[in-house]
Length: 184
Image (cartoon, rainbow, N blue to C red; front, side):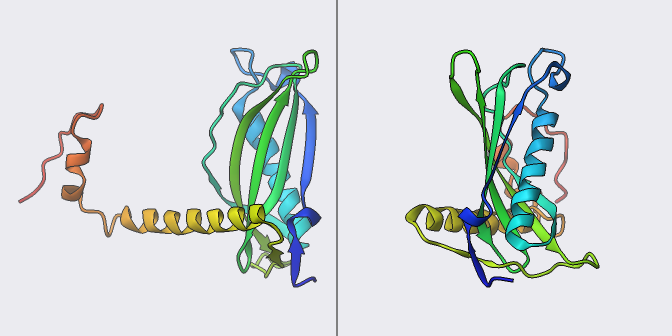
């Protein structure tokens, strides 16, 4: 196994024609179908980088920016943005192309954290990432910041640490009715 790899070595793109069987009740491509494709390409990219079977540990921020129409070509692009000891952050970009007009629209960007597994199902080390451009350094540090922010958010809002009194003021003016009574 290589000690370090470039993101170019495991970059993957897939393109698929969106069919009526992929659509929801409003005639747009079902978000669940797109998520399934995103998970598949994240798996392929992470497995290619690590040389191991990989599992999805988390998905960060899935925003559907533009609807995908039946008959459009959906292209998914994946690359490794960050490597930990056994985990990788796969950056994904989803674009839809209207075959008739050639118009391309950005539909989604997301980040999948994937963990490499050995033949016994245990976490296994992955090659580090060669940072060979300003863009690769930006993506790596952005992923590092996102991971730190997530850990802080998880600990701040854990049931053991959360103090409702600290957050009640933030709820004023929000579309919620508070019937909870703070014990004195």
